[in-house]
Image 1 (cartoon, helix red, strand yellow):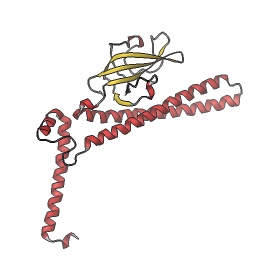
Image 2 (cartoon, rainbow, N blue to C red):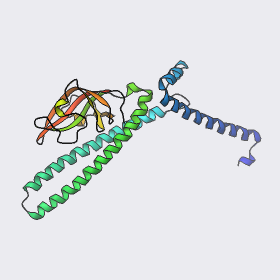
Image 3 (cartoon, one colour):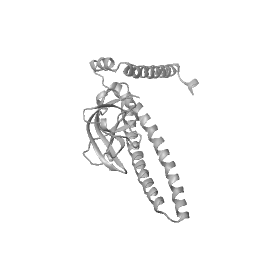
Image 4 (tube, rainbow, N blue to C red):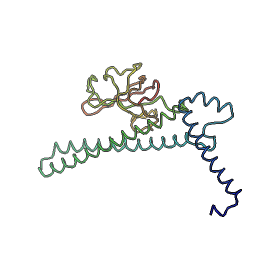
Length: 245
């Protein structure tokens, strides 16, 4: 018990606790300074021979990056589930249209309704994950902008056969015909930026970042893939400025 300790031991323990509290307070203050003025603080730390993550065991940057990587992996899994649900929903619509038996038609409709609910839940989960990933991304950008990807592919939506109108909610604030190489367009809905793998199916490529609402991108290349009644549109882009909100 503390009462039985020698006064010197109690003094050492109290000093240790005080130093720990001061250290924690300094780390919090340092983190805030890094977020407010990262360039100036990093220059001073570098001049002192210190590197990010080496100060008194401060590993917050590595932890944020690790959390961000986990979120990207989860985002990929949710995106895969959404793609499968979309495929199943299309198959159910086709079955419902050709079913002649009323009981079978009713069962298919019930299953389609359940599928629609699952798609909505997956969409909400995906939106929450994008928001979380965007927050983590902003923290990383404050201290290490170069570590956040700015090039990659984004999914724009599905367009009509003449490429004049969108048939689904687009991720950019521009008409399909205006999305051309060299054009600067704004993001109107959070969208994953995916790695350029050269694969024909960009939706399976790794997620490297999230583009927030209001951020701008320059279109480098546009690809069209056949979809029901139109085109599925992807664009190779370069982000301009921060990730935005």
